[in-house]
Length: 125
Image (cartoon, rainbow, N blue to C red):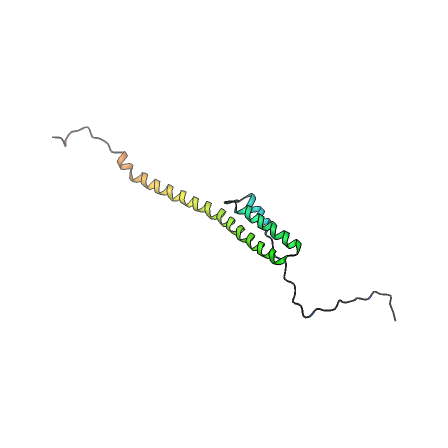
């Protein structure tokens, strides 16, 4: 019997247990980005608080609470991102339509402001 090489010992196979679910994401980087750059109505800060809670729960081993806080962090991050992207676009669209409307109004009223009074009194006679 040759024992010069190490034997590979295999752990007993666990056939009855389902594979472990992956740890939930905490969305911390997204929350930091929303807090620093696109903080609409402090939703980025709220998302950061929930992301930190999710990370703390994940580290402590409470996967279900981590999944719950992660879901809330994702929701607030999505709201902060959507609000910070949609509102400036909406404001820009309102400014553009306002400028177009004012330019049309100015073109229509040019005739009113360029009315010239004639020197002759033909109509009075």
